[in-house]
Image 1 (cartoon, one colour):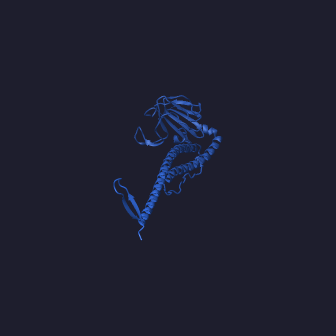
Image 2: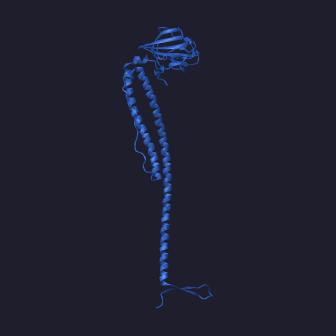
Image 3: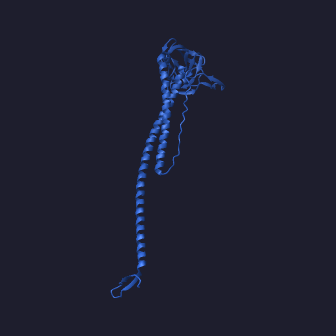
Length: 309
């Protein structure tokens, strides 16, 4: 029995004899099947790589969009963060203002301590499975931080609201006291010597300074810091030209080293009235006003009473 074969005839040129090749059918089938398998494999691989390429391209576009949105969100959050920080600064200013009001009105003695140490916390550290997750996490972390700050500020604002309501009620019933309480700067200038112990500019020895020295140009205006009545207007040892105003309620203010006194004993004064001009009289090293506040005969720190920034 002849073997089953396939005969392949090749005609090289018109003048040459044709060449014959015989391939067993079994080998031909194996070659055909192998070719089919390879063709299918290559086709599948090409299709898979094409799909991966398209997916990668789509992911790249999506990632670029996510980055763009993330940048926009960060800018918006940073702007909001600046507003929060401004709010924090304002809250701090209000807190200092409230403290001064309470010192002036003596309400600080009656106020109960408030717990203003607020705790902030929470879990952190989700798995970073992808760039998208990382971007979302970064934005979320910023939002969480801002939310924590806002919660603290909201609580502080509520405390300030309650406190100012208490002060408002006090002032409604104490309008005369408020008008008679020193609360502004007597002149504009630079504080060259504060309240308390210092080295004497004359002897070099420690001495207690019972007021504020506010340096200013000679002839600058000195104004009363509250309503009252002038009880001294003349020269006093050490003070030079001195104005002394009795505001009632045990409060007296002094303005020393004046170049000129503009009021006389017995004059009734309102807050902001011009009472003297800055000078260099008495025990002084240069033009300034020595400003004192005396409460029940005891000198106190004027800074605690000045409500202006």
